[in-house]
Image (cartoon, rainbow, N blue to C red; front, side):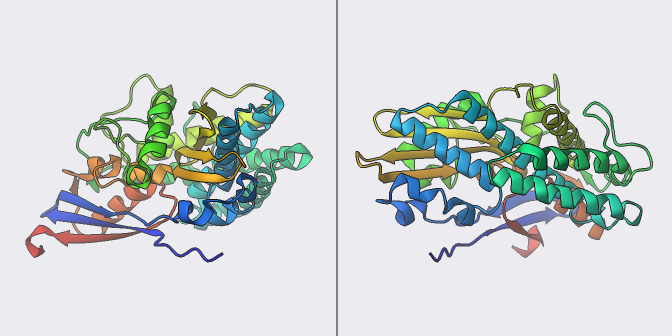
Length: 364
C-alpha cells in the first residue's frame, strides 16, 4: 500500500520589529483513510495502523479497537482494559522521554552514559507497549529508566530537577528573556468534550478533523492541558520553561505508576462511546494529547466510515493554542529570539516535523 501525503507543518511568524504581529500555519495533509479502508473488514486494519501511524501507534490501535468494540455493542473485559491502559501509559512515557532527551540534552557530555542507558530502556519499553504485553521485560525496563532518570536529576513529580543536572541547567537557560509572552486565553480539551468531538467526527468528517473547533473553542491538548487538570492554577502564559517542567513532572508521575503496577490510573486514559447501531468511537489520552477514532460498520462488519482526530490538529490549528501563545509576543533580536520561538513551537510537540520561517510584515 502506497500512502503519499504531506507530513509537515509550515509555520510563518510575521514580525513587526521585535513583536510577533501574526502567525500563519499551513497544516499537514493527512492520509485519506476513508478512501483507503472503506469496504474492508474491520479486523483487517489492526495490522495496518502501526504503518500508518508510526508515532503513538499503540494509542491508535487501542483507540481503533475500542471504537470497533463500541460499534459492535461489545465491552472489553476489565483485565483487557487495564492491560490497554498500562501499554498506553508505557508508550506515553516512552514518547515523553524521547522528547526530553533526544537532541540537545542527549549531547550533554556529563550525562551521556545515563542518557544512553535511558534510551535503550525506552526502546525496550516501547517494544513491550507495541506488543500489548508487559511481564518481566516491562518491569526491568521501568527499573532501568528509574535509575537513569535519577542519575539525570529527575526524582519525583513534586520535585524540580536536581541542581547541577543537565535538565536543571537547561531549565535555567529557558529564563524567558529571549521571548516575552503575553497573557493568552487558555482553553483545554478534556474527556468532558469527548461526545461533542466524536459526534462531529462522524457527522462532519474531514472538514472537522482537519480544522477542529467546538462551539467557537479551539482548545489545547497534551502535557500542558493535563497539567491544568491537576494544578489548581496555571500562569496566564505558558512558556518553554513551564512546559518543560510539566513534562518532567508527568514523566516522574507515569514512571511511579508503572513501577507500582497495581494502582488504578486516573480516569479518561481510554473511553469508548456507542453512537447508535453499528457506530462507535473512542478517545485515548496519548503522549501528545487526546486522540479520537470513530467508525461505522455495516452488517458484515466492514468499514463504512473511519475517522480520526489527532492532538496536532488542535494545537497547530490556524487559530489555535500555538497561535494564541505567540501573537503579541516580544522576542529578542536575531538568533536568540528565533531559537526561543522554535523552542516554544517544539514544546507543543507536533506528531510531524515543522518548518519555521520568520518574515517582516513590511515585506508582505
